[in-house]
Image (cartoon, rainbow, N blue to C red; front, side, top):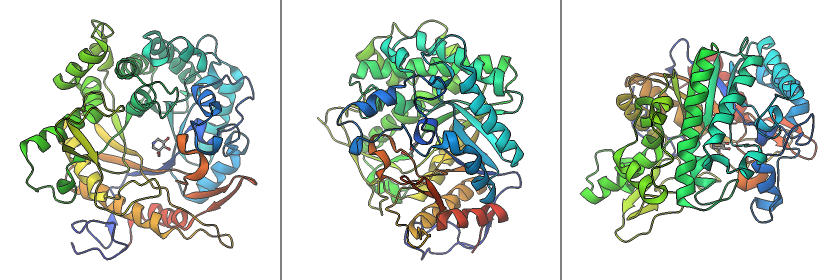
Length: 477
Ligand code: IFM
């Protein structure tokens, strides 16, 4: 049944309303990341990460916030797992903090750091929740950054060693392994526009970092597979790229220049990572950009073969569409080397507290395109969610706007599955309100409200709604 949406105006008109059922083995869960929730930054031998340094640098993070305490998950993990169980989660995606395992990014693993993840995995399994481990969600050991960070080739090799050490401890119980989370963000916000750690601003560095991240992905995927890892995944931040008119109407007429701008940005955002990982090649226009800003010496013979390891899934972190139009003479955005003559615009749509436009149909269209372009790999929604200005009143958070966002995007995932996309699961971002990088704690993405001074957790209405969605494996009418 297809009909016009009336709820809060975020779901697109062609998405099915009423009850929808997801495929039988669809995986439901939530995601977090180490630096954003763990705290305990100086405990049990954890070394410094680039995010500790960046957060300590005045002016880099809103309100001078940092991850020293965060959600104190390092100490409260057992309660947090109980909360997950009570919410009916079947899967939990978390990341391992590299500096907990190797304080300086190399050498013998720190047993105390591994112990923490060991306990967490056991707790999850006892609660019947499947762990999805991400090895790199941005907290690079500071010592490696001091040696060049991701602009240094050696970091890719160090990463593979670290991945093997974590797998050696957890691999008997964890079947799903993600190498990198959002390498585009690591490279282009970390080394391109400097909005994220380590805060460097050089297009050549950003492009070198992107290649070395991919190399680290390939080397670690190869090593993990040989060590017996069952499921391998690369997670990208991905968006539908479209002109303002196309955002709401895929059939909208666009000029040749606009169409070229869309495809160029699609290459920079999506193909720059997926083509090497899944096909062993860079798109020609990306390679031309790399050559212009960084030369090609850092791309050595055999690298692309190494990067192109068989993987099982591509994880998609989707929040909003990326809206662009041709703008002759416009200089490249610092986060987007190669984006000359393109203007980044915004969609005419309601916005989240991050100012991100809410366009669920963008997710269906993205999933359908990716599944057509890369039919060899399954897809997984590894992050999707929204920050809103939540208010805790009398023990409740009535976050109707988040429920609407999630409902719209789940309908979009369902529509893509119906259209033939092989989407295996959905993980909401995030389980808990947490440290939102340069935005500090002011942006709340959680299904669960965190009162930071007391560390009290309060499931928002969206968490209770999501529990019901999981329980019925679908959406009610
Ligand atoms: O909080 C981040 C997460 O760490 C990576 N993906 C996007 C989220 C929201 O900005």
